[in-house]
Image (cartoon, rainbow, N blue to C red; front, side, top):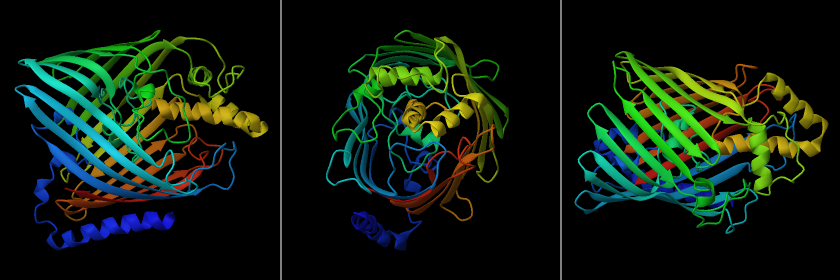
Length: 463
C-alpha cells in the first residue's frame, strides 16, 4: 500500500510538473486571502458571488514514535498515511439576494495496517451546505450546515462554541487552518450588520444522539450529525465598535450549561494588535466531563472512576486567551498568546496522570481517553500553555511562504512544534511540507505522546 500511496503522489507531481515551465506567469489569479492561509481556504460565507474553487491534493505523512512511554497507549498509530482529496467550494446565486453555498471534500486514505478498501479508507465530508438570503439591507437569514467561528485568539478560542467535535484531517496542525476547514453545524442563523456593530442569533437543533469517540474512521457517507448536532444549542452575540476597541459579547446555552463570553481587540499601533478572549460556565472538570461522556456513549464501563482529577461536580470554570499580534514591514506576522483553561489538569494532577498510568496498565486506556476527549473537544488538556505562531509570505524568495507554530508547557518547558514551507509553483499548483516534533522527557506534557516527529509532503493542483 505504501507503494500505491507513493504512486498517487508522484502521479500528481508529474501532472503539475509542466506548470513549472510557466511559473509566476499568473500567480495573481490566486486570491491573497487564499495564499496567506496555511490551507488556502476561505470562509464560504465571505465568498464573492458565483465563487468557484476546485482542487485535488495529496498529502503523504511519515511518522516516528518513542520506544518507551510512561503511560502506554492502547492502540498503535500508523507509521505512514496518505490522503488524496478532491475539494470543492462553490457559491451559486439562485435568485436575487439568495445564495446557495457548498463546501465539501472527498478523501481516500491509505495507511499502515488499514485495509483498502474498508471503513475508514474513504470519507465524504460536507463542511458547509446552506442557503443565505439578505432579507433586508444588512439583515441576513441563513439555514443549513454553517461553520460559525467566534474568537479573536489563534491558538485557543474559549468563545468558539461550535468548535467541539468538528475537526477534520489536515496536513497542517496550525489551529488557524483547523478552524477554517472543520465541519459546520446545522443551524438557523439570523444576523444584522450596521455601521458600528452587529448582532446575531443562532439556533442549532439536536439531530442525532452523541456518537462515541473512536480510533477507526466513520462510515464513508456519515454526515457526523452525532458530533456537530447532538444537542439543542442557542447563541446570541452583540458587537459594537467603541473608542477603537471592538468588543463582542456572547451568551450561549446548551443542555444544562450556560456560557457567557467576551472578545476584545485593540490596535495599539499600526503594527501591533492586542487580543483578549474570555468565557465562563458552571461545569465539572475535564476528567469528570470525559468520563461522563464515555459512559453515556458506551466507550467506558458504567463503574469507571473519575481520574486523574477527582469528581467534584459543577463549579465556575473560566477560560481565557490573551496576547499580541505583530506585523513587520516584510509581511512577517508573529503572534504570542497565553492560554488558561481552568477545568484542565494542573501540575499535581499531571503527576497523578503519570503515576496512575505507570502503576496500573488497566487505567492507561482511561487516562488516554481523557486526553483524547480534550483533543476531540478542541480544548487544552492542561490548565496553562503558551502559544507562538509566525507566518512569513514571500519570505526568502518570491512565492515562498514559511511558517511555524509552537505550544509550550510552562510546567516543564516541553514543546510541540510545527515548521512549514509552501511554494507556489504557479497560479494552479503549490507544494508544501510540514515538519512536526515534540520535545521533552517521557514524563512531560508534550514529551509523553507516542509520536516524536512527523513529516508531511503535500501537493495541491487547482482547476
